[in-house]
Length: 424
Image (cartoon, rainbow, N blue to C red):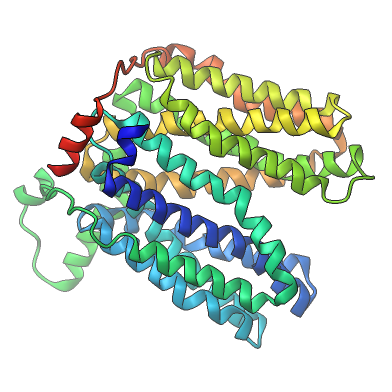
């Protein structure tokens, strides 16, 4: 990991991700509190949070196309700056519809920022160092899940306005940290775009553009992903994993309330355990590069599923927190392997489009998991835990031949090589 710390573009991107996620986790605490305090409706709070995700779901294909055809630095910085302008306005809104409009605007900034930063991984992480570079980035993304809610808890007594202004400040810092990032390599135009002249007229041009964004991009991505058996399996298991993660959103507070009703804040301690494990697990992934990556990915999914299945059998807080820390660590390892393999297998011109389509689909599976867990809550904690374990471990085991077709990475470049790649 030492050579990663000498790679200044990678460090800038990691610090930018950390600042952006830290602010986002604070708003994730503040926004529902704002709606509940001012308007007293849990349903409206849930709707407002859903509206924040809506732009990403609806316009992911458009955003990915724009990011891949332009400089992703502009979209990454623009998304952060847009969030910094919108978020402080939330506590000043006088009507619920105004809060919801601002939530949509914040979601638009988020929709541009995520795929743009994913594309910048190809600039910041030298070829051959995908595992180590992505390990640092994943740790930078996961650590705020531990720190952000705690900072928000400290700031809430001083007023929600301070909470949102702090988020805006972190968003501004996230944008400023990207100044000086190296320029991405020019992206060659698609073969079909140069082979066929654009038809005359604005309406025809708009039709061609929309077809490219919503039809051609999806078709080409599907062809590329399905052609690579390993990438196809990893993509599919990412959906089933997010479904299980959505179920855990309801399972964990139920477990905390039923097993540890005498310990105030136990849900927060359990969530912090996941965050702690995830922040450390990113670095663990870098040490596993010598092994076949498909086997690593399959193993961490299975072991994480076992961790969730074990949880209802535990009645003492210490082992429960340890088990969740392990689950968080294995989740982070799987995420690092996923990002590294996607970066090394996809062409740079397709990275933004891939993540712009992947992220909203993962969000949709997460929401579906939350809904299903609510419908199946009557099956009890053990039933929900078994379902989480099955959807996390089951697909990885059933699709093991595809995962085991992946390669071992072998030793990554020495520090000097990483510095040379950065200078290039």
